[in-house]
Image 1 (cartoon, rainbow, N blue to C red):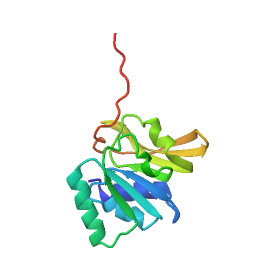
Image 2 (image 1 turned 90 degrees about the horizontal axis):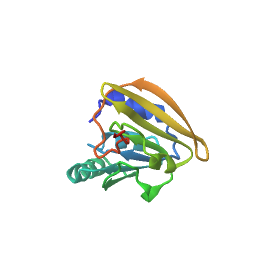
Image 3 (image 1 turned 45 degrees about the horizontal axis):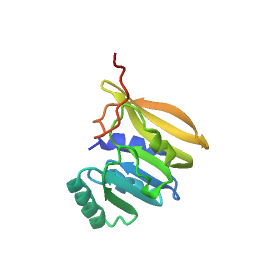
Image 4 (image 1 turned 120 degrees about the horizontal axis):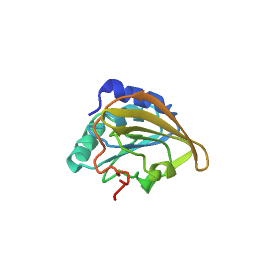
Length: 158
């Protein structure tokens, strides 16, 4: 689980609006999804570990959070099922951001990912400024656990 202070900073950086449809990759406990649900129209959250997804579903229901859909599966290259999204957040670090995430953004959509490998990781905000054109901004340095099954960059081999 990410530190609450880091979760808050990531959510704040996304600039969520009441009409936004959000994708979260890495549900964990469901806490971050619940926070975002209070700021936007709907959160779709994907968790690789089935027991985590089930527990988060129960927690969210018990808390009365109704605008979150928890789905179990591998979201390491996004979750096209409900795309396009106004915002996407990855709760695990990736060595590179797969293009599939950017392709699942709505016009003006934002993607927040912690990019890099220990000890150098940067929370980076990607924004689709026009169709297929993205800006990126390094927001702050941090260190979080890697996203399971994240795509690795190709390596040079002799």
